[in-house]
Length: 486
Image (cartoon, rainbow, N blue to C red; front, side, top):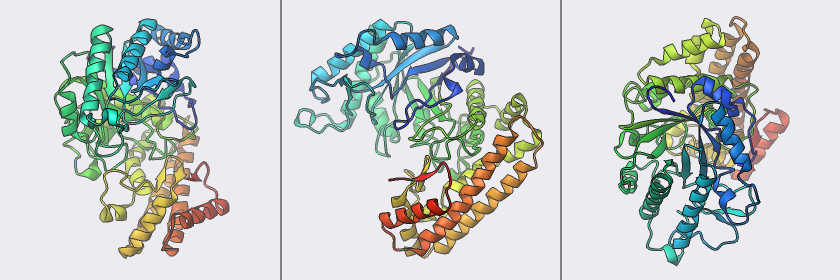
């Protein structure tokens, strides 16, 4: 662990649709050399509690034990992770109003930590549930049950029962640390609503081994997201989460340096210089939850981890010194990777390129949304027909079609300029990948400029009509690895 005592936890976020993503960020030796102190070896997909449930095969903990030992041998502390509730498939428990639901969960936690005593702690979450890969396991979203048995339990009380159970079982009974990830979907949940969060966390009894973790953005990892105001709230020790290849912003195919935002706050939100880690940190800062790679529903497309590496180095540097100048961090990383100094100004401009390629100013004028600020017309590696139709129809209704067309024209012009700068850089080990990244960004800009013209010309649009336009464009002018969402 670093001298400051803060945790640097590495968590590769696999895809629910594509399984285990190939990445060097699973190598414990690499993680330790980079400066990570901890790693999650059982994630929200595979989980850990299933191995302790009825129906699990013999030696179900053997693979987990091997991963734990490998990480420990490399010098890392280890965490296991799972959802509340993770239960035997053949039981009828699952309602948060039933005592046996909580008893089965608590016993599974005890059994797991007894079987793998060398872990530092357990990470638990609620608010988003993925199916388990194990056929004897079911996962139940405790917030969705509305049966008569839990009618008296509102969302606050359900979440407070989680805090109470985890603090008692994981921390007090088992003597381990526990992280409750507060992420849940939307703007009405505990993650985005700091007042709801405060009511829930008032149940915390003060054990310092119980911690919570929130994303640095108030909702998801989009731009136009303010610095999460709950970061500085009192309560349990707190981790702050950062995603190094943003799932909504080309998942590592386009450079996307996040140092200024993480350090100073989002410029597009009018926060720069007043937010970010340099200005707003937790009262009891337990550390960082860093997603080097992964997130969302896509498979792996980028041929290099260079852009992830740029942000991993930045996150780790800011964890050590949150007031450090991000430009210095970028220069340091470039020197370590042997990148030419001439590339620095280009990388510094990459957040502007992302804003121009991925987001729509006209939609901000019309809707000014915090959740899905660009209606997710493009996400991960897919174009979304329903969102495209909605935007085209509303923009036309508001007589702003020319404004949207000019936006896409500007995106193409910016991408072309950035590519020209990339092609003029001195050669280095990563030259081919750097140029190919900017070349793909230009292809995306040109493709979407033409496509938005087609969509706007076809108004009024249904979802199916928008889908057919997108599919025809893909047939006539493929843009690998992208596709159209079903």
